[in-house]
Length: 438
Ligand SMILES: [Zn+2]
Image (cartoon, rainbow, N blue to C red; front, side, top):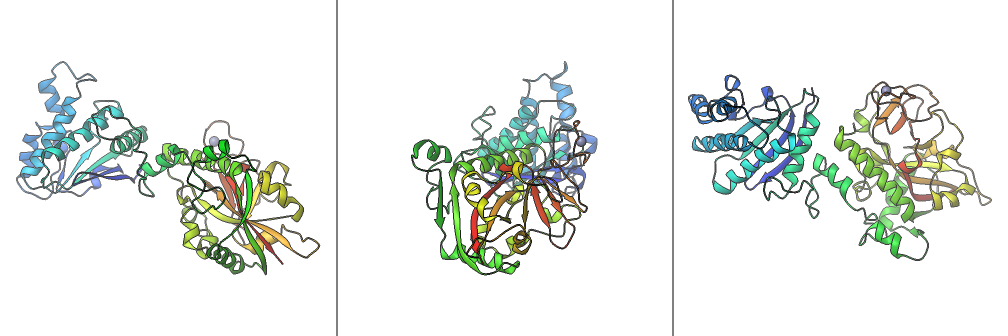
């Protein structure tokens, strides 16, 4: 049984909430059920019978009466009428909150999109015609115990994000509004948007899209820039607080081609989260010892740009001095790396002291370390040394599984004194800052 809050939206003065779970646990003035014997009307004696009658003895009875030969797709007005009747009656009795199941998707087997658009249209029309209604909250509970709850949830989310211009309105979210963080609509938005460079970049500015930059600019696709004082102090704090030594300089790598690959991978991860399930945050993954340490020290001005919905973190990566230039131009390449404790991948750490173990020094005694954006996505935690060639299967945990489609995105080693974070695909990390230190 899945339980989660999918979307909060407003239709005029009515707050509409879509939830996956069980209607049995809901609390509201009125809980509607399409099967009248199950109708539960909790708080108002006498209202039960009224709602029961008003709703035409339930959706089933209404269908039996008005559609004696059975209902076909296309006769969907019945669903809309049922919802409207319930809302009108609720308003008569000054009801404030009402809960519906995802009507029509159960025994009626309506396609999710059609059912959702009819239910939402009924709420929109009711709001338009009853601006002063007592009904302030409408909750729709999608039963989380079936196989098809995701498609029903998706249908409701898309319908609520559509313009509402009729039941066949485009399902795409309005482009100018960014849905709230943590909502499923936000995941869809991030997947669908045309990405721009990060807003704090100073050479490749975010006033045009990455694609525009990559087709218009003539010079190099890569620029190493200086950072402002606040960014410097933020990174210096994370570096020094986790065992780093004396900093010589901190620079930002603005590599528009490399960033494009990375952000596209982030978008794929957003899509995966949208159609399957939200990534479990690092601190909540089984056997995890807590959230990423760098987030604790980095300034909020930096961390607010991380996509925490897909477990994106800033992590350190130590490397040899003579590898730095090629990494700046082409990014990390796990295919050329030598195999570590967790196999052949890109190794990153939340402590500078751990990453320092992978560095060397130039003739001036200076070492180089990257602070990278890493898209950990769905995280697999291991407590023992395992030579992975890729992350294991999300269903059976087998690295070589050929039965299931979804793999974890990253592996985190929760053994030894300091964690390591490994991705096996080079596009899952972007080396954004380079720290030169002694
Ligand atoms: Zn498997």
